[in-house]
Image (tube, rainbow, N blue to C red):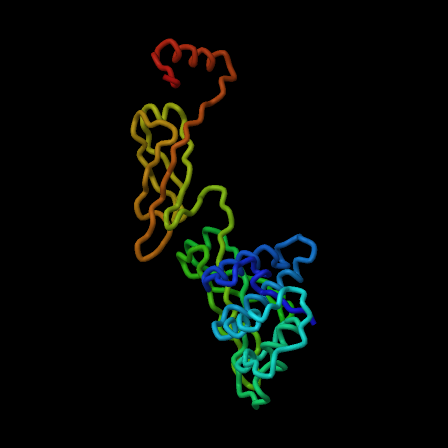
Length: 294
């Protein structure tokens, strides 16, 4: 069998921190997820990334792997199995879709010195879930489809109000099956937000754009502004320029301290399509001593 350099697989250096390894794993898992990626060989790359993360995420396994790698092995080198003193697989049963190399190190066929295995908890599964802003704001339920060692399945996930992108939802017992009577692992879902035509999230602040007619911006007006929590009335001061930002306090993302909604004013100019309309613009040009480029 061939030796696998799991650091190369994740694109990190051997001295990378645990946080850097997790960050690289999440980025590559999103990139190659079979339900998302259109790249050729994405499913095999997805499996390789999962295997590399499984080998490096747990400190004892990583330490044992580093000691083995320090012997001068590189990706593609012939590997005949771990030495008799190997202890990297003593506390782990591999029940996923792993390579022979991984299972020779960490699987039930790996180390352990022939001990009779006791009950072992199953491994956690990791996946992503994308929700719309309204669901993230109000909370609700989202159905997801998964393809994993359980086969194709659909789960209903409870979304807590105010969850932020990158946060995780844990579904107990929905991961890999346990070994020798042990409990199943959990399914850990990393939350992402779908793009929205009206709103954008910045921390806990919600950003939006409010179109105004020239006379509303010039004379002031009271206009209706959509928010994720419903419409509110906003008073526009007279003489407001396009690009001005106005703050709706507490109308942003829910939380212990809710965010604000930041409204950017956008002045839109109607087209002059009739003689009367053109005459109005000509009259304005005469009446106002105004150079927008001054």
